[in-house]
Image 1 (cartoon, helix red, strand yellow):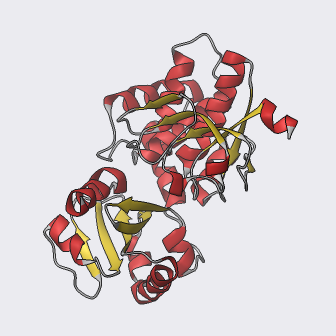
Image 2: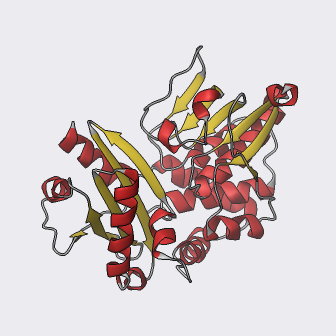
Length: 311
C-alpha cells in the first residue's frame, strides 16, 4: 500500500486510443522531470493496432495495465468522465486532470489541478509543456505525441483540429524527421485495419458511454479507409449491437463507420431512442442505418447534437 501512495499513475480512458496512451507516456515523463514525482504511465485497456504500430515505430515500451484504481493516486489524461475511467476510479484519489473534452462527472475531495482545452488532442497540450520549458523532449516521446495528434485530428482533417495542433505537430515532425501527410496516411491504414475482428470487437474497439439527460447512450466508431469492409458486415453488426444494448441497457447504441478519405460516416443504430438520430441530423433511418454527410467526429459532431436533443 505504501508504494502505491508514492506513485502517481497517469492513465487514459478505457478502450484506449493513441492519444490516451501517448499523453500518459509523455505526461508521466514530464511530471517526473518537472517535479521529481514518481509518475508512472499505465493503461486502462488493451492497445489497438494503430497504437501498437506507433509504439513499435518509435521503440517505446507499452505501459502496463491498471486493472484496479482503488487507493491509488491518479492523474487522468484524455478523459474526465467516470464511466470512461479505469475500474474503481471512485475509490481512487484523483490528483490532476489533463484533457481536451467537456467537463463531466468528476468529483474530488479537495481542489486539484484541472486543465482542459478545446483542442484536437491531449498530446498537443503535453508537447507544449515540453516545448515551453527546459525539459528535454526525447525523440521517442516526440514521435508518439506526434502520432497521437495526427490520429485524433485525422491528420488535421477533423473538425476538432486547431491551428495549435498543426503548429505543434509540425515542430514534432521536424524533431523526428517524418513527413506529416506521408506518415499520417501510413497511420490511417493501420487504424482502419479490420482483419479478423469479430462484430463485437469492431463495435467495442473504440467505444464510449454517455449519460445524457435521462438517457444512457453508447457510441462506437470505426475509422477506416475501406468502409465497405465494415458495412458488408452490417447484418452481423446490428445483431451484435442489439445483444450489447440489451445486456447493458442502452437507450441508444450507435456505431459510426467513418470513411477517413471521403470524410463521411454511416451510422448503424439500435435502441428505443434511435429516432433521435433522425431529428438530430435531419435524416431518415432505413434498415437501422443512415448516412451522415461530413461527420468525422463523435465528440464534436455527434455527442453535442444528442445533448441538445435530450437536454
